[in-house]
Amino acid sequence: MRFAVCLSLVPDPDTIEVDPLTGEIDAERALYILDPADAVALELALRLRKAGDTVTALTVGPVEAEQVLREALAAGADSTLRLWDETRTSTKPAVTSMLLAAALRTEGLPDLVLCGWRSLARGSGKIPALLGEYLNWPVVTDITQLEIQAARVSFQRRLARGGRSEGEVTMPAVLAVAAENVRLRYAGLPGLMQSRRATIPVRDLPDLGLSPLDLNFPASTVHAATPPRPRPRTIFIPDGDLPPHERISQIMSAGVTRSAAQLVEGSPEEMADSIIAFLAEHGFLDRPA
Image (cartoon, rainbow, N blue to C red; front, top):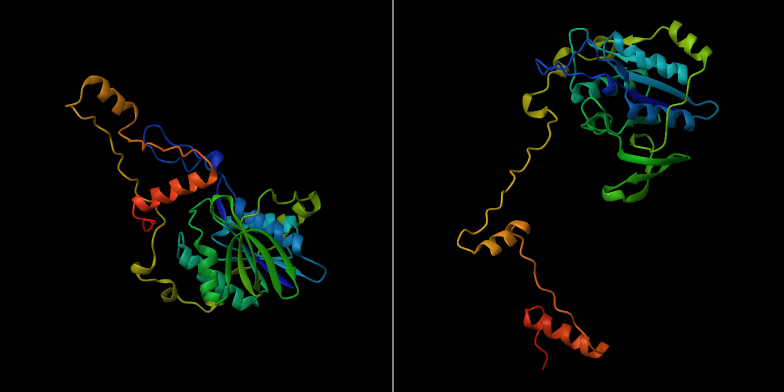
């Protein structure tokens, strides 16, 4: 079985400093690390690997991005591959996904592609979805647990408000993992020394069967990931015609009028009759005969 893991190099948040005079980020002080979400994907691939399986780490970026590939080799990855177009200085998620999909086809399609669920750099989470679209493979996101059984992957997904769901998907597939309490293993000294001496293969556009025109998407199809516009804050103003104590009460309650609750007492039959009468009075039920 063949695993492919998509890695990215991102700025370390602990090294980001803002110039107090210009308000700009001091790029000279920023250090770069393997994206934590991608590190989780790499660790899961290494855990799922059995005898005869292979794990390939891929990244899109300039020569500095080889740092994450050497880290993957030191942790135990079998091979690496860097993809880049030297005419570019940066890429959008759509371009990154197309380069990854082309490389996977050129080098031989794997059985499973693992990605981090959301990058520290952009945080859009578009890469897994776009990669699945270019490969025409199913995509499952926010995976917290997974288990491989024959040609199927059983998984648990994270839902909103702490919920969880379970399901299965047939390989090949693209999985975006968000496993909790998973950390990339520490690399031993022999692995670190070997990764430093390793030669990282590089593929450019001709090697991938692409041209610059293939990566020039119309402006209408490429959208920047921007935070939603905040809603305007409503400031409550009390009614000036009310006496002072009522205005103070309105200010303390922020203008929220609390509805009076009605307490129903009596035997179960009497309470049921009261509830039915209330619903009928407000039009929810037909009035009883």
